[in-house]
Image (cartoon, rainbow, N blue to C red; front, side, top):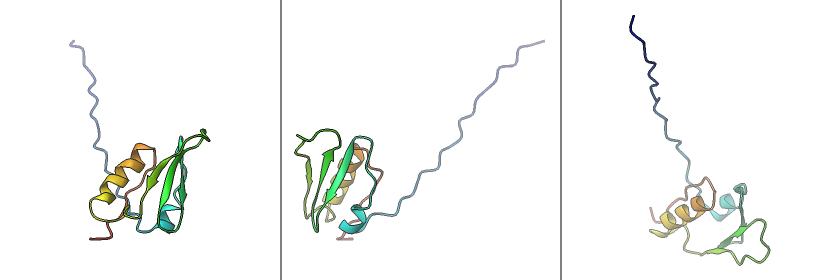
Length: 91
């Protein structure tokens, strides 16, 4: 009798579709990541380390939601552990 090898078939993972965050007010409600927090003002904000009071942070400018900057800002937020996609105000 031949040995039967088990084959594991990887099931495809459906991509998670996120509704883009469309305002500073919405961005202010995003939960902290494991390592960073958001400090959002009226029309700008900061990404700061949670456990480092000396961290000056990364600035999110008034241009965060405009043009190609929204793509850069989305990647920057994701790099710091935030599961977000920003809307493009020019679209």
